[in-house]
Length: 248
Image 1 (cartoon, one colour):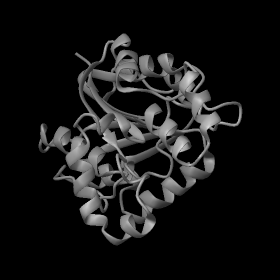
Image 2 (tube, one colour):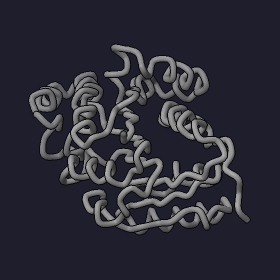
Image 3 (cartoon, one colour):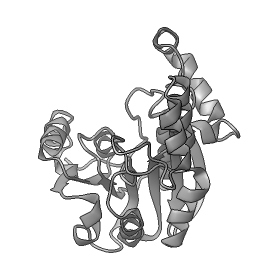
Image 4 (cartoon, helix red, strand yellow):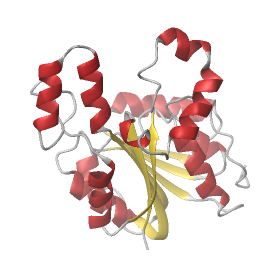
């Protein structure tokens, strides 16, 4: 049965998702009652896709992992939104060949640009997939947090390597190919013709606190993360940076 798009409830807020959901909710509320076409690049098992589909939007998830897409399909079926979620297997680097130009109102590209071969090409494909006026939610690994985390754990040589590396990597064993600061990430999106409207830090404090504190006061931590997300210098020290941009 067709659902009228309504208010996005979303999953329980956590320090990893609260700031992102706040931005997405504001975007969806700009167009009340409209079923948006959403593209989730690297969306995996549907942590964002399924709640968006539950709110009445149509979501295509592109991911390289068949196991993740199988889990997404099951999750969507269990949530009763299988008809509004489409799974497409493919790499972020091949996005331009998987999605029709100008077909999406909203594109999510979370934790993708730090692992693909050519981030500029992926961002260009994201921009091309958007309709004029459409928005992109981009989440990238933060460089400063990675450096501080290694230094605080006593890995000073690794921290020095990360500081000196132009891409912000910590050597050949690093699982990420690059990390970003706010200016670098914004420039990457700007070069593809996107206009960055907001930049927030995600996991400003969550990764630094003892588990007993984080687990013992989850609601307080979520509120503190939201309060600090857009404020200097805290934003730039976050584990991840969330950029929200629009195609003119």
